[in-house]
Amino acid sequence: MYDSCMSKTITIDDDVYELLRWLKQGERDSFTKVLRRNVHKPLDTCGELLDSYETDPPAHDAKLDVLRRIERERSRRCANRS
Image (cartoon, rainbow, N blue to C red):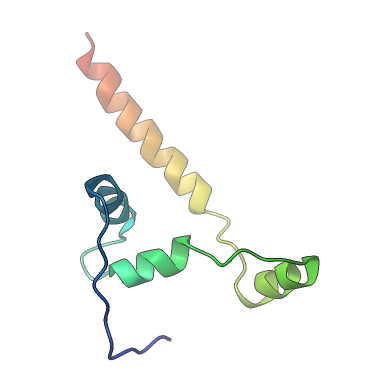
């Protein structure tokens, strides 16, 4: 899909790095892919929004995955309270 020979070095805070690392989907996933999935250019018009949804519809299961992960993490933490 995307092929780039160039790379850039950016400076980010540790908490942002941890967030990006958390969003990675496996060992072969790159930070570039994480950013492309999660950072989108703001849309100015309804037409741009419609065009965006037609070419790249939102993942319907993304929020469900996040909720499942939160549930697992919450269960683990609650078990430690006893």
